[in-house]
Length: 397
Image (cartoon, rainbow, N blue to C red; front, side, top):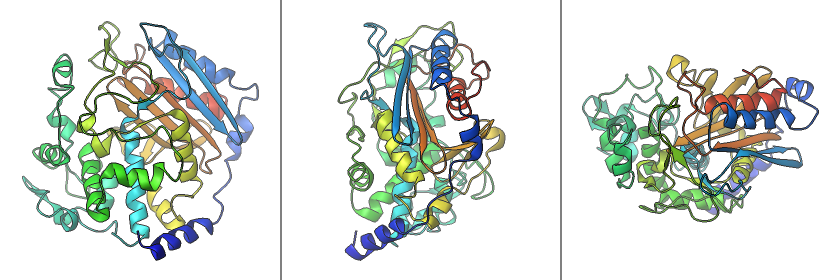
């Protein structure tokens, strides 16, 4: 980054006006007895959803609270520790979107640039025209590009996952898998979640910076924010470095009470890449989203872009909208902003108030929920947690 560009970004962020205060509803309705309601929600994740374990870290002003239920390791019964790392799945997308928006601040690119400008000839044919798809449409999932995950679902669902979980992919191969499916709609005319979008976004970052995606994220976010436990695994690195528990899957639908449980801690993350391969902790995620929501990573213009929400309707999670790599969830008492991620064996959520003062980061080390016939899996547990922490509501629903 040029010195003048970096200085301009720093000045813009430091001189930005303070963001709006926490909604009054949160302050008024919050359970004043501490985190009893939140702990009850964690316990229900074990007794009701029959998950192996769940952990949560809350940051509220200057205070931090860590809670848990169940176990981090079914074979030893060990408890979770705040420093335990896990795969964050699609929360990776927020990091990628933030880096791209920083590059826009520096005039390295524009959200209105086409995919063809940065990746000539890659998205072409089979109904695709990369010159008509913008970076913005990649980030907000309005590109119409098919999801590569659909193309590999037969190999990565059910028992076949055990045979294929160490398969290796390059980003280009993932894109080719994605565009092997026909476009879901013309660019800008619909909304559909597609991991292919964020693989392309990561490739554009590499073209714009001359560095690997992992290096760009490290230089721009991990190091400045002192996220000591956040990293992108190297290609074909199937483990998790540093302290961590075990992660489990039933290899079936999210609502799968009768299926056996498998340890899937080790897997090849290359199929996720820019759409979902980062590893982090609840504490690091709270720090990242706190600084993002406080406006310390992007100036107001880019934050407004990021928070311009699409309403997916029935195409995504009920009560949830999507911006540029960030989501909003409507609770009984207001809205929270952040992102969630799912990968085999691990589901996680990090959401907070718009001013970044009050945040909750949570993870379950199982990818099912026995009491969620709607198919939303651990999301039902996370919804209870968010309601309990931000609204002081009942966890009985």
